[in-house]
Amino acid sequence: QVQLVESGGGLVQPGGSLRLSCAASGTIFNINTMGWYRQAPGKQRELVATITSGGRTNYADSVKGRFTISRDNAKNTVHLDMNSLKPEDTAVYYCNLDFVPRVGVRSRSWGQGTQVTVSS
View 1 (cartoon, helix red, strand yellow):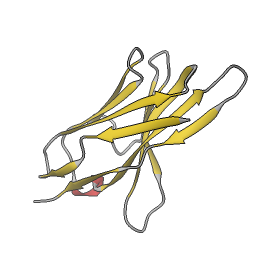
View 2: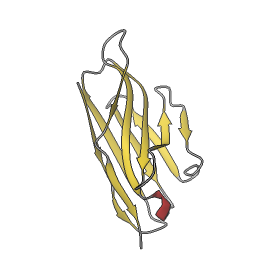
View 3: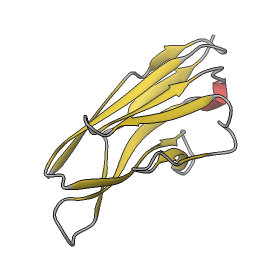
């Protein structure tokens, strides 16, 4: 079993910054991709950014140039640095893990979500 603990959400003014963090623990043999998704009220969950074990990143067009994803493989942790935040970034942000709990098995896990609100 894997636990994902997210932190760093909150209320910020437009143009401000926040850093989200997600720490994974439990039965983990190897982690492939770590990522962040978000879901705004009345909308579907969407990809924000992902990062592979080798450091390859992928971003939604709406956040390119403003958000940066990074990971610490030694600590099984992923971060999302969000700058120049806009009201449309308001959503619940979810950490996602694509991992191998044991050899020959692949699984995905979601965090509980952390609220990010961008408002003046």
